[in-house]
Amino acid sequence: MHGLMQNWPLTVDKILDHAKRWHGATEVVTRTVEGPVVRSTYGELHARARRLSNVLLGFGIKRGDRVATLAWNTARHMEVWYGAMGIGAVCHTLNPRLFAEQLVYIINHADDRVIFTDLSFVPLLRDLRPRIPSVERIVILTDEHSAQACRKDELIFETLLNEASPNAVWGGFDENTAAGLCYTSGTTGDPKGVLYSHRSNFLHTLSITNADVFSLSARDVVLSVVPMFHANGWGLAFVCPGLGCKLVLPGPKLDGPSIHELLESEKVTFTAGVPTVWQMLLAHLRETRGKLTTLKCIGVGGAAVPDATVRAFRDEFGVQILHAWGMTEISPIGTVSSPTNATASLSAAEQFQVSLSQGRTTMLMDAKLVDDAGERLPHDGKTFGRLMVKGPFVVERYFRDEPTQKRLDGEGFFDTGDVATIDPHGFVKITDRAKDIIKSGGEWISSIDIENLVMAHPKVALAAVIACAHEKWSERPLLIIKLRPGESAAKNDFLAFLEGKIVTWWMPDDVVFVDDLPLGATGKIDKKLIRKQFADYRLPMR
Ligand code: AMP
Image (cartoon, rainbow, N blue to C red; front, side):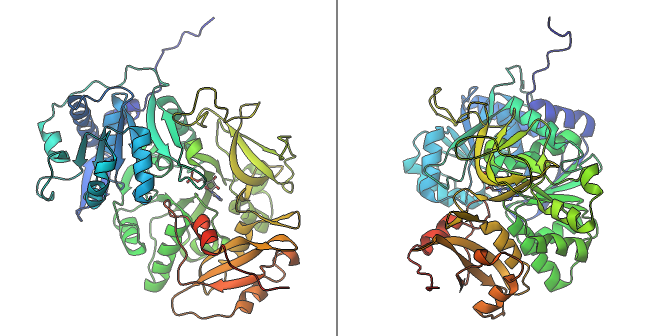
């Protein structure tokens, strides 16, 4: 027997419809690529996204066609998301930090028909143009005044919107229709496309609006630092209109001073992004003796947050860091380190350790640990194994995989490629990426743990630990450090600093100082590149 409730397909256009109707006057503030900070509202954004849908229909875009964006976080970018998704087209977010070769591969693989780009990337796209034949048009996200001379196949966003008719019909299709496409950074092999559906995005949005995730409500002001092109923008372009939060979008400027300015001028209460952004903000605040007068919480994920960062924001600025773990393949938020009644009654030191973990699963997300044979491992906080997840916003298979391609285990779990422990309270601690872990004499050393400890040293700006080949132990850790400006140090300073904090056999065999550590396309330290740079490195004999 079926229930007798309304059949209301979970399509994301309804989220913006809701925002327009019930939070229509709530502001969306953008630092534009052209420079000035501009103000819009959910009501205006909705109207413009509708016009954009008509522009796309005029281009002949049909359901399922891929509409790409190569853009920073701005209101215009959001208008393209909703304008495309609302008519059943697939919004494909391109990451401008990828190498040209990777972009060409991804655009061709996705078969993108249109690309909406910020002015910043027009020269890049012009270079790629001969190698991306599926792209019929390029739309520049600007107005006539700011656009330089356009080529024949390049159009201006504002001109198109002005000429478009105001009403388009959204929705009316199955909730399993594809909505968004986002390629993983491709740390191994070619990038892989994760094809989100309306339903998966809708359910992910609902799970994020849970108080135990980011504790957001209509009274919050959210600065979305995490780029919309990285991992579904952590869902914030759906969550904020869904809840009616004022939304602040930083455009191209993600440096400490620019972020600080927006946090203060817009009275931001919550922001989110990868750890490196917050380390830059911290350095700026310390240098300028800056204050954070309205910010309450920062959601940090994408890479492990060092405890020095958590302490600094808490003790110097009264800001809570909420540590989250996720990945493109899971829409992306999987766990968040919010306490439970059980953990809230632990000692202060233990509670701090809980807050440093990647946290417990969000609603609708299931997780397990398995060994190499796929057997379940205990959740005792000590045994580590491969972290597997399952849920309605976890990938089943990648875009253009054969339907027979198996990406899940027999129980329907997806292998995250991360190695983790889960404690009896259900808190996940990521030990490492499976390929970053250091295998020393059959035992495993967590590069993340050593990096986080070293990051607490006052002279350190950034640290990375990688595996180096070793005759006897197979692999041993090498510590690579970028010092803060003006600092100097000796190798032994750091080995002495680690003494007593880690077991002796985890101690790095060598320390190397570098001027810079490469960041990958999503702002995380690029271990793959560092491993390449140090491929011929010989550890001193011990
Ligand atoms: P991406 O799909 O680019 O977001 O990368 C996902 C990967 O980033 C995960 O599989 C983890 O290896 C890593 N990651 C994400 N969040 C965290 C975190 N809080 N701590 C440690 N690693 C993380």
